[in-house]
Amino acid sequence: MQRVDNWVTRFEEGMLAVLMAAMTIVSFSQVVARYGFNSGWTGALEFTRILFAWLILFGMSYGIKIGAHLGVDAVIRLFPPRLFRFFAIFGALCGVAYAAILFSADWLQFFGINARGGALDYWLKMYKIGIGLDDLRYPEFVQETFGTQERVQRWIAYLILPIGLLLLAYRCLQATWQIITGKRDLIIAAHEAEELVAENKNIIKD
Image (cartoon, rainbow, N blue to C red):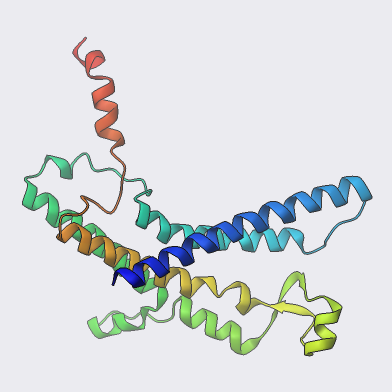
């Protein structure tokens, strides 16, 4: 299990680093080309927007890993330890359910809920249709060499939807187990309400 976690962590960190570097390079080169040479890449804005979306969807699972997601825990920390742990586990499982529903809601029909589709279904539709993005196009040599269509297919850009949700479900399951085994308190890391009360306790007394 630790080997799998190490591989997933390296994958997330590697992809996040690549995405941030690509966004920086594309944005910088576009500024130089536009203001220095009165030129530029037509698909730069769309490409950067896609990279940013990928960064967010990779980041949501990695945020669970490092405990960076914000939340309010002022109320449940008033509960006895066992009740606090119950709600902490419940919150983590809600994260798993959220990822599972967005990935594919078809399984909810087992419980009598009329729900269909999800990220996987949407991505498969884009793959079958094969329509292209608005501005992002393959270079001419790629079109000639591999016989691709002119515009980059949407399913390539949308591949992050099922991948990101699978990673989120994995990290939420991992957090659930860590809460059960006592390795972490919550799926979130924020104690902002508690910190604000501590910082302003003297003002409250006055």
